[in-house]
Image (cartoon, rainbow, N blue to C red; front, side):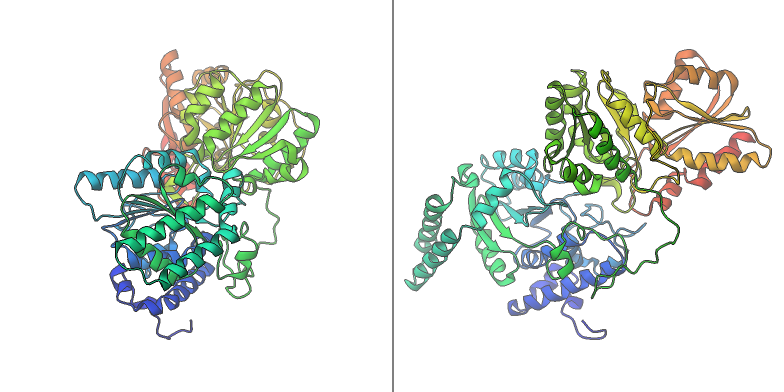
Length: 634
């Protein structure tokens, strides 16, 4: 759209404004909305492909339903950019994912149109069903609830639990299955193939369409017409699909599949469904990245964009440093796993739908029979790993820290209780940045520390990551957790030979007698840099890399408290229950009385922003750590 030209989108500040536009002009609204998203993300990167794929669906939903009275829940969350732009946030969209700006995900504190907070997947059906049941209890028979579930979210067990419960209730609930056959990486599993079978049944779709046309020609009127159409639809489904429709088998009325990029047809279908009471599923076929050729052709790479790009050519416009960057932690994980697996034929890799994100794709390419993408199913991933382990294998189960929260019970019940050697590699530990509160890996050190049998560790650099991975696959280690952050590590030779680390041992990196700093994980690099700075001024500061929060290195801690009366603990995790808490518990148990200052993520949810901004907000960026050091030394 040329600068200064008149856009319909400029007049839309709410769904009420959208409804004032003639239906014939909705394709223009869609084109403008798609172009707006492309323009905005070319300058302010974020999730890209998913929202482009649901532009027509976003417009049709807000055109047909009475939001915010009617509730629309956008599962996964990164589908919702078009929704946000249509609901009063167009002029603020340039702040998307920025510090103090709007969230990249639906957020109930941000807008009344965001019916439910989402960031992880597969929660929409359960939440929506609760809202629909509440509407029934309140006698609000006209209130509609719509759950838009897509980007692989239907593979998670919770989605099926919601469907199962939905089949027993008669509340007004519509599930829109946004079927693009993609999560971040291509969908896997039988359910994905099942949907393809339905969507590509040309005979079924052809006869169904011709049957509808025949009924229309008969000009059937009144309630009998809808009844006959419904009977025809169900009969064709039962006759022509390869297997019984899973939704109809649950007594949930199924409609579709329909073209998710035909806004006129979507509007008519949604209008019809709005008038049909009870639980329903609408199967919508979309293309992730629709309208941007490069995103359509390479959907995984364009799931989210991390840099500014030319909206015509797709060329990266960010200025690249000529200084080589150290490798990303996830790439060190991926390459190290292959290296270990080449020497240990019992090693297998598991990920819940994040092969490219966690770099398990490296093993999947080189050893496809020994690497498993189980779909968005974190609970299953953990118990699947337990089954592999009890049969004598050594599974490396890679799950993002914030997603591991979903499988906490399985870690306790299926792995730790049976003392199985499952190695949990927790990517994205700590403050992750622009994805915000739903994605920060803040809690794993704390919630894992309370589980018997479980070794809980975090490497300071890539060498230590490799050494911990090597240690974890040695015989008789039991459950083992290794957490590391998103992004690049240090400029070190991470390819040096691996060696075992004695479980529960830390290391003294710098000796000193005025102050002791205890760190866990890569935050220790910042501490080292500051200690070197203080050393130039004549201050004597000790630095201990703890490496393990469970078991703690008690010998090291006795040495610390016998020789230091001032101690700072630093961790990129919640300050409640983490390293600092473990150190205070040790002090209390052994009656030490040193002064301790704890730095970490405070006991509150941290918003989105750059990692640097968020470290500053939490007080353990370099400036914050230096301030605490000065306070303790004064």
